[in-house]
Amino acid sequence: MKVWWLAGGIAVLAAAAVTAVVVTHGDKPAPVAVSTSKVGRGPVSSTVSASGTIQAQATRTLGFSGSGTLTELNVKAGDVVAPGAVLAKIDDTDAQAAVDQASESVSNAQDALDKAEDAHDAALATPTANPTTAAPNPSSSRAGGSQTGQNAGQGQNVQQNTQQNSQNTAQNRANQIQQTSDNLMSAQQRLNNAKLSLTQASTKLAGTVITAPVGGKILAVSGSVGSQAGAGVVTLAGTGDAVVKAQFTEAEVAALKVGQAATITLPDNAADKYTGKVLQIDPAGTLTNRLVRYAALISFDKVPDTLLYGQSATVAVVTASVDDVLNVPATAVHDGYVTVRINGKDERKKVETGLRGDVNTEIKSGLAQGDEILTAGQ
Image (cartoon, rainbow, N blue to C red; front, side, top):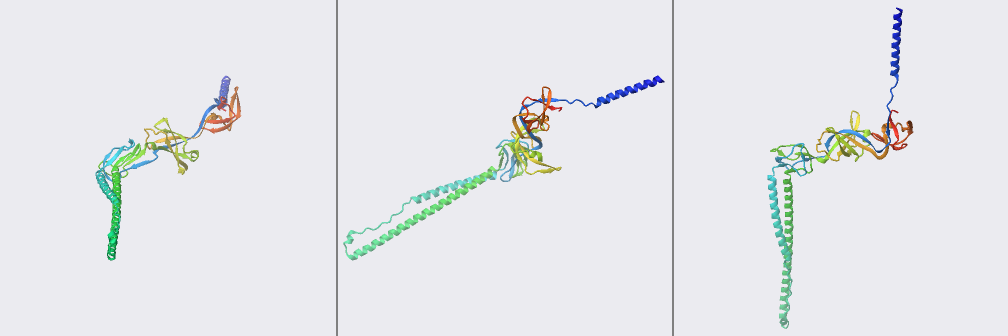
């Protein structure tokens, strides 16, 4: 009985010893992994990121100049068209007849103007009659006094009649010139009006065809062949008008500026990065779930061919950057100090920092390129 008790006591003491060892070993902190890096030289940049959707910066609603029966519809939503492509047509019978009639009116008015110009030129070329004065008869001067007086009176009457005839002729010529001038002006006005009518008719005829003013993508089409159509048949977005409309917080938008470089990522191909820039920043924010956000438009430097309006996208805008500067990983800097390893010993050094980027931090003084620093485990 005594032997059993002693054996049991030894077992308990052994278990307690093992437990003590386990507990003691569990309380010991695990060693912290230490990693180092070299002070490098290169660019440092800071970015802000946001999500958004692809949309057209501007759309064009295209229609006909008048109403008519839709005779041709060559596009559907989603089609990509080139500049000048014919998108749709309406019946142009009436419009063509109006152009033909206006063309005939112009031709008739031009003929009338030519005749008016000829008549005016002829009136200007008609010579003006010169008044003549009756010369005294020498034999009459040797005649008696009574005969002389009678001849003088007749000569005066002839002279007055001649002057009156000349004046009448000059007045008639002036009247004729004025009349031909008025006719010329009237003919010119008639031609001007005829040409204006032709221009308007031609514009209306051209308006029976819708062509793409720019290359782009068809967003919407209304109507079908045989239906009545007028304004607003095709909605077109220019190929180069695609932008990302992204939402930024108040803190993020404060760093945004128009023209800043951006990187755009599409969810269907996250591996491809598209370059762009900040095109516009809304001055007023919108409140969503107690958080104010500001919209910004990010344009593509080159719009992808497979881009879909309405699809989601993410953007990263470079808000600050410096090139060719000393830099260290951002995790190496703590309250303005960096731990430098010199000959196997760690030394804490004060540094002057510049731009704190997304990955690295600019070092203005306190370190040299190639210095070994601790980035973790400090």
